[in-house]
Image (tube, rainbow, N blue to C red; front, side, top):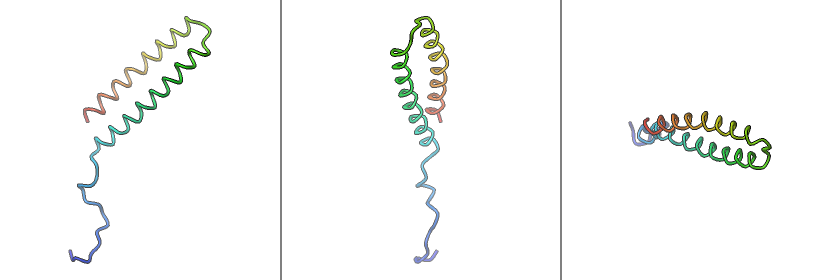
Length: 79
């Protein structure tokens, strides 16, 4: 390679590893999940009329979302 040549491709060392991208996406999804949960909780407190339905909805939300977040965190932290 001559000293005047231009290198158009980035060196391999400058490309971040896949695990950094996966961790960043996980953190972004976790923040969105927390914001959504806060908004949902606010609406439950303000607009719910039936306590029984409120409990069923809360339990269903926790039972479906917490395992998914747990699986995502395990995958993101082990890659």
